[in-house]
Amino acid sequence: MPVAWGTEMPGLELWREEASSERRLQVIYPQHSKLTDKEKTNICYLSFPDSNSGCLGDTQFCFRFRQSSGRRVSLHCLLDQFDKDLPVYLKKDPAYFYGYVYFRQVRDKTLKRGYFQKSLVLISKLPYIHFFHTVLKQIAPEYFEKNEPYLEAACNDVDRWPAPVPGKTLHLPIMGVVMKVRIPTCHDKPGTTQIVQLTQQADTHISVILPTVHEVDLFRCFCPVFLHSQMLWELVLLGEPLVVMAPSPSESSETVLALVNCISPLKYFSDFRPYFTIHDSEFKEYTTHTQAPPSVILGVTNPFFAKTLQHWPHIIRIGDLKPAGEIPKQVKVKKLKNLKTLDSKPGVYTSYKPYLNRDEEIIKQLQKGVQQKRPSEAQSVILRRYFLELTQSFIIPLERYVASLMPLQKSISPWKSPPQLRQFLPEEFMKTLEKTGPQLTSRIKGDWIGLYRHFLKSPNFDGWFKTRRKEMTQKLEALHLEALCEEDLLLWTQKHTEVETVDLVLKLKNKLLQADREHLPVKPDTMEKLRTHIDAIILALPDDLQGILLKTGMT
Image (cartoon, rainbow, N blue to C red; front, side, top):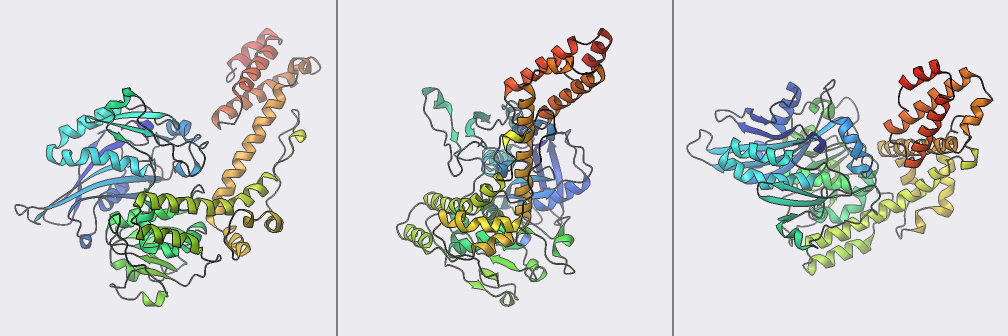
């Protein structure tokens, strides 16, 4: 797949050796892809269901694994140019890869194990779950019949794809099918999906229209536990250690991804593993009993984890996810001491006491939808809107307070360094909640103050605040640049020495480089004005200095 799409490995085919349970890489595309041995081992084990899962037929799931330290990175600069326009929850994480799997297991008496087992895997930096699963669904079934030449042809199609520019409607051909997709931007209104419609006659060749590139079927995943949706939202928001025990990788990965998605548009900043096995390179790190469980969400299927992770504070055990239209029996919240046996019943095992009172209205609305056989997609829209409103009610007071930390624009002087942001003071923030807290936008009662206090100590707050602080600092840098552009810099140089003038030129050039490197939110005409200022100042200097400064950096 093109590097612009965040993957160096479009087709990574694996097969399980017949005489044992050993996994082996059979073929990798493109062939120049460089994987470390550790990455290959992780991919091999994560690309197959555990033997106890009993996944007959075709199964799709997703995993996430840590990139080996010191690995040569060739993707980042190419992806960065698109990253800046993406919503924060769709930005790539430089430390992780996603693996998208299409696994097939069918009975075959001619083979020693009695089964044909093979996985086609796509590795990418991008969290476009729905999109990549759709791509695999288009090519994997036929590939299993036709083998390598078919995969090579699919790769050739993908090589011709346009870059994944956020906000643009993309037409992506793949083996006789054309997919029409739109990648969201950070400017889209949260909670809205800009569904691509068939509007012109020219679109008659479109075979597949994707309404989303990343969303999972939220209601289907939360269906067994929707009575506890709000409590699970709190646990994810607070970055609490959470294990999903499921019967198959498909169910575990979908549920973990739904949990991570439930606090959108807030990004989940801790680690999460949609499918985690005992062979994972972080297995010892995440299952140790010598320290408190880390802030991570794990999706597991091996019964061994019921014993290994029984010291974790929050465990969701789910049964088979029902097809759309069916409703499983609602699980109860149970104490962790009840999770002792491997055949423990489905349930949420925790002693966590939610800060907020349960919203009975959303439960009635979803239950009514089940009784009326409302489609799962419609139920997902209701649940997603509910989570969005809950998250926004929680985050708006924080956004409002953080905005107040920004210095006034009149304090920005072109001849001084940009002013610093004021410090975030938790108690000062807490005082703002009395008049401008979540009660303004949410009907839910409860201990909001306690929830905020807990959140301010979480990895999600740390990640969110670092992101906001960076954005605001960049805004200050951009305003400082604009203030510089409004000055008569040539007049200033006439009143100062050559040394001071050369120093100014070098500083202005550094400002231009910084604006370009950090994608500062600067207006295009500001950059052009600054270049004009620099050129004018240089031309007013003696010839020898002109030659030196024209060679130094960009103008």
